[in-house]
Length: 375
Ligand SMILES: Nc1ncnc2c1ncn2[C@@H]1O[C@H](COP(=O)(O)OP(=O)(O)O)[C@@H](O)[C@H]1O
Ligand SMILES: [Mg+2]
Image (cartoon, helix red, strand yellow):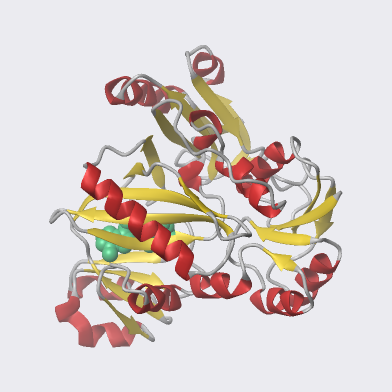
């Protein structure tokens, strides 16, 4: 049986492993926390630091193929393993572009992919000379995640909030809708695309708040999104599953925001709402099996379960029984022992007839199910 390694043991790894049980594969996970969400669902758990060269290299030497569930992994070790013949999906070259938002934006520009105009800045002081470029979104080149590497700078008064490190300063987009689309590329270069989804964000936490699939967009916008996503995935020249986040602005233009070369939060609904989930799709790609069918079975809404403000400590779930009594509502808990404000602890997928029905139920779920600390 093929040994496949996953770098990272978070919830994306956990859901990938839940699906692995249906495939002929021997699963290996490396993470530095023996109680991480994926630790107890894999066949072989290796304690190690995914950012450390030696740990990643040693781990790679034990498996036949390697994938990631988070971008912040040691890229030099992956490049060396690839030179030595290991099949790494996504390819390290594609991951290297994506790991740094400065390179990622340059890549969109090189491939004529529409994206918000930007300048690269080396530190906070450099932003002082760019006041006329504001309002802008400042994005850390490396190391940002879950909105923590993004700071909106409305005017000169916000410059003290700017990052003091190499970053992208990107024109603020007048956003009509935030969209995301998954593209699958197999080892033969064949592709499959999922219907785009629409995201609604919490302006305070900057974390995915709720998401609706399929996105409610005009046919011509849909074609534009699909064409951009396919062009982008092909330009990366790598097999894998790619999640492309986009903005539809108020002029009707579609802009690429960012890309993740892995299974993605915006694709959780595919477990229940699609013929082939994003997790199943990635196994098909990793094991060189045919691509799956991306047809949607039902409209869906995805609600993230995040740690309540002011609640830290061993986790408890309030309202679980009530939500389990609702129809066509699927709860996914990530098995994290401790909650803290804003931490992603699980998600709920709701299937429904239409948007009104979905949003109605999503609001009930959000009001009822709360992630709190044990008292
Ligand atoms: N240029 C922009 N204009 C307006 N809002 C933006 C811009 N860039 C990012 N944002 C907002 O910040 C959020 C997080 O930014 P993103 O680049 O996706 O970083 P992350 O890696 O944290 O997901 C976006 O989903 C969007 O709501
Ligand atoms: Mg994002």
